[in-house]
Length: 155
Image (cartoon, rainbow, N blue to C red; front, side):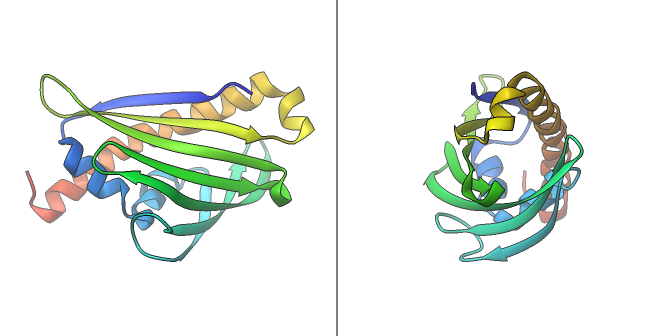
């Protein structure tokens, strides 16, 4: 299946964006519209940080295990996602790039490594559903970054 990528430009610096995304618990704040029941394990941030969640998309619910497997501050975080009893394996990659005008472009790419037959048969619908959910997550991320920046007093 072809990957799905969504992006958003934010006024925060790449370091600020990465610092926020590096903390696994922060992801709940911008993905709670389709990921619930967050349970954390491993370190709070960085490689080995983990969460187990329930994904509710397209009228189905499935348990998902998420683990950070690569981190390259302040540019990139790669998560491995496993669900459907291991039949679905994917990578979620956050890429953070500086903008010439200041701020950063945050992109999230969801790449299927292995997908159940039904996902493959319904690929256009599955990809559209993921794109919509992740586009909403990017808008919520932008709002959470602003809220976080205001709460911590960083500029």
